[in-house]
Length: 288
Image 1 (cartoon, rainbow, N blue to C red):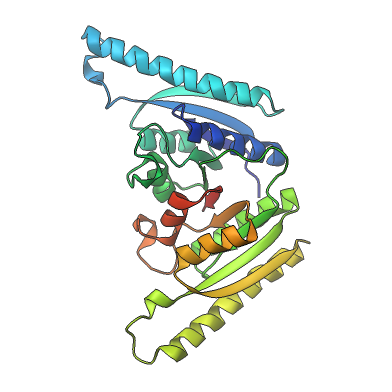
Image 2: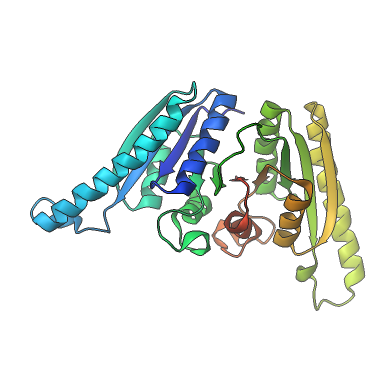
């Protein structure tokens, strides 16, 4: 698996700069080309009047300068690495423009900050990052803090429930683990909240646990076939809390997970385990 082209969108925020560092780090590992993109949100000025109305024109120019300044910061980061990069300023609705740009340029991975300049930070459900995560056809790496200087990603967590998207996330997680010779942690959570109020809960939990164990064993086998060290765990609890606790206790560096699991409501389910993990995680989360 290769990420030939990595897209890093920026709004000039700290989160975007952190995401650029993660994107550049992966680009070095996978020998990728990077594209830095800044989107002027044309809803913030009267775009139809920009050629006519001088105030709208000034507004547009100020936003374009801001976009160019944001890109300049990323260019400086890019210059510190051997990675080749290209930059672009586009006009449109940010999440839509990011996705269409990714499509147009055959991007394999998008790396972006979880919260930008909105001021409402990561708890804003309609944020650009979350919309991109929910609707992107390519994996999205979200992050909110800079990678640590010294190391790569030494401990990679792959939470899995055996669904198709979880399986896709396994491949990506293992590909990154191979590049960094990381230890792979495979976690499956028996979701106790899903059986609350059911009649005769014990056998349901038992069969769920068995399925989880089979799932983690499958991923462990795949990891070992690639010569990677692997740790597995099956726990009972609320999935996103269990994942968060595991990240903290095992000092995980990166999480790779599917955008939606067995709920059947697909990736548009905002309350999904993945969306919550993306919003609250201190470490990068790769959603597939």
